Amino acid sequence: MDVERATPSDVEAVGALLRAANLPLDGAAEALRLGVVARDDAGIVAAAGVERYGEAGLLRSVVVAADRRGYGLGRVVVEAAEDLARSERIRDLYLVTETAAGWFPRLGYTVVERAVADAAVGASIELTTVCRDTGVTMRRRLT
Ligand SMILES: CC(C)(COP(=O)(O)OP(=O)(O)OC[C@H]1O[C@@H](n2cnc3c(N)ncnc32)[C@H](O)[C@@H]1OP(=O)(O)O)[C@@H](O)C(=O)NCCC(=O)NCCS
View (spheres, rainbow, N blue to C red):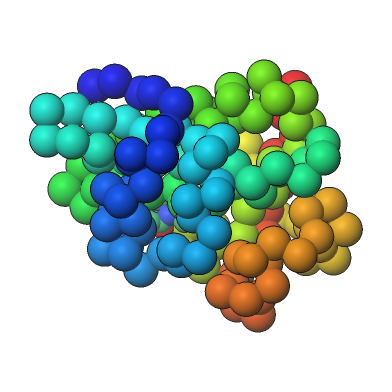
């Protein structure tokens, strides 16, 4: 299993994973500019991306292929995306999730008020449209 920086040629395959997981596609290509993919012989099996807003980032497009879940791949791609964010001097990572609020605390994320995220990551596509009303907002401070 290789975990690598995402490239523009990965966008289509990651889009297929996101579509299969019913996750938003809007803005995903942009987030993958600061993103990672995990691939094996079958192709891309997991991804995570970060949208940058100054010293804050929005973690998004975290996805693992359905038949590869439960083997720690989700943790691997999130930690790789965090390393990438740190290398870009991002201090806080935010996310909005409708499906995985029970999972992200394992990786150090805690629930914050939506207003805190709005102040930090502003008018992101995900915050303003897709999960605006129903998602749980979480944050991890990167040290
Ligand atoms: C959420 C997701 C990325 C986790 O990836 P993964 O590779 O399966 O995660 P890991 O192997 O690192 O962790 C697995 C553990 O987390 C638990 N877990 C997985 N998804 C969970 C969820 N959505 N909520 C709560 N717990 C979850 C599993 O039960 C397992 O628990 P165990 O260790 O006690 O057996 C993956 O399930 C996925 O792609 N889901 C669909 C897309 C999605 O919801 N992405 C998040 C969008 S913000």
